[in-house]
Image (cartoon, helix red, strand yellow):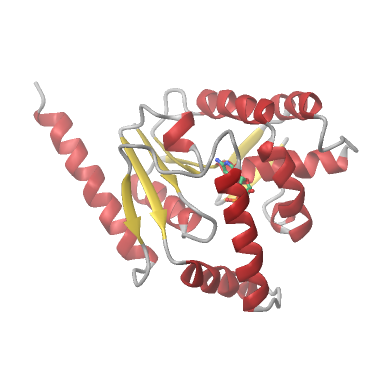
Length: 222
Ligand code: C5P
């Protein structure tokens, strides 16, 4: 079974998806981390971020795995490195390139074969797994999302101003919505959850209830 969790930056997708996968005992895939990993490796290997075909080759050659709450590329834990502002910026052209998105769709579908999966990103329900049993679009007001991202940055020891977080978030939201391929949007049949005023555990409980209802329906179908 596949559950997709899409939504804008800072909506709490990663922590929610990770907690949900852990409660269900399922695998977890952070597709933003995958785009970030390709950007990191491209910079390290001196690959031009505008050379889409070279980025496709690179993406196809990488072994990306989600282990112990982190992400490994070719066996190396890059969880922290991919979160820097430099990599956030470098990820934009990578994620905007249609051939790269196409390759990532293939890779993500390959990784999902034969497993129960919670996958999160921008296009998981709308493009990559349109047949997923449960598609969720998590969202929250820009102010709430920026407050959460700000707290997260501080907890990682990075002192940033809330106003800077808000403006870089607005820039990313605009980019995600303007992207012609893999545009940020809920799948037509997605359940939309507004998370303002809800903590992570409350969101996870709602999702678990949706999964239980779905599993109950499956069992009662002859
Ligand atoms: O979610 P996160 O901030 O880690 O995503 C990193 C970048 O990858 C963002 O620019 C986002 O737009 C892009 N992305 C994407 N498609 C996905 C997941 C992330 O284009 N499925």
